[in-house]
Every structure is written in structure tokens, then in C-alpha cells.
Length: 197
Image 1 (cartoon, rainbow, N blue to C red):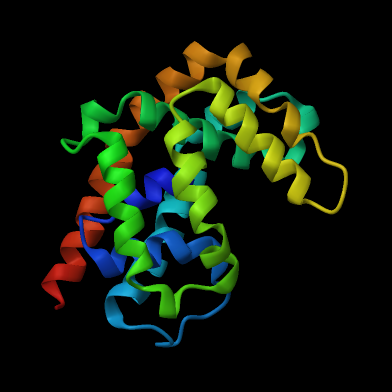
Image 2: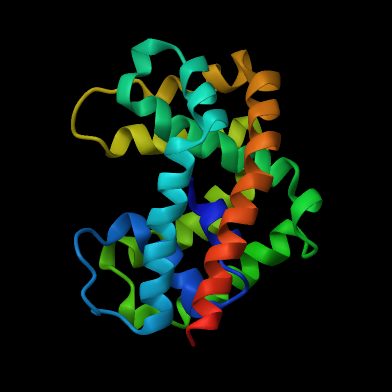
């Protein structure tokens, strides 16, 4: 999953949200390097990603993407699912999307001392333009072009929005089946963390 889903699936717990957001920027064993809530958020991020990779709905979505995108198909589906989450936000969350993005930004900034430098540098772009633009296909297109430019080698990511448009209805159906299952999975994981506090 991508940034919006990881933020949304944090149970309104600040430290868990920060760890969940940091997940793509912290590699390897955790070994107690972070406070318990942040460490749980990092572990939660990894478990969310594993759940997605194993989900029949996510796999079906990945196969809908043209084969020329190769290993980038999963990353595209991650971002496309964030688009569908943003489009259907009110089905899953009470707080309005833009308010949630603003609140999340303020929450994450309170933990700047533990954020990986690469993530901290991206916060203004992430919260200022990327996340608010996820509702629109044009916004996804801009994000994909920026992501593509960050790679040192040639890649097809900049053309990914065409796959979203080409498969829009079927990808939306996949997401609408997938996300409630993911929410249930995450609620169980969050419950186990609270039981151990």
C-alpha cells in the first residue's frame, strides 16, 4: 500500500502512524531501535504490505497492469489503491480527507527527531501536494512522473496513469473488495498491540 493507506490504517495512534509512514524508509531488522509505538508502526507497515502482496484482489489488480511495467506493477497498484481510497474516503473514515491529511502532517512533524532524513525532506511535497492530489487521475499522473524521475535507470512509471485510466472500473472493484479485508486485518493487529500495552 502507499502513503495514504498507511497513514489511515494506524488507529489514530500518533507513534503508530509515524512508524507506519516510515516503513518504506527503514530497512532491515528493527531490534528495538525505536520506541514501542513507532516500532509497532514499522512492523504494521510490513504486515500491511505482506497482506496486500498475498491478497487475491491485489494480485488480480497487478495482473491487470500491462506486462511492460514488470516489477513496477505492484507499486502502481499501491498508488492506484490510494487513489481509490481518496475517492471513496467517506465510506471508510469519518474525518474529511483534507482535514485528515493536515492532522497527519502535524502529527508526523512532532516526531521529526526520529524520521529518516529522506522522509523528512519529502514531507512538504508529500503532505502539500501528493496526498491532496490523490483523488484525481491527473494528480496520480503527476506523482508517477515525479516518482519515475527519481530512478537512476530508465523506467515506465511516468506512463502509469494510462493503466489506471484503461483499467479504472475493474481496479476500483478490486479495491472495494480488498480494503475492507485489509481494515479487518489491521484492526486485529492493532488490538493485539493494545492488549500488550
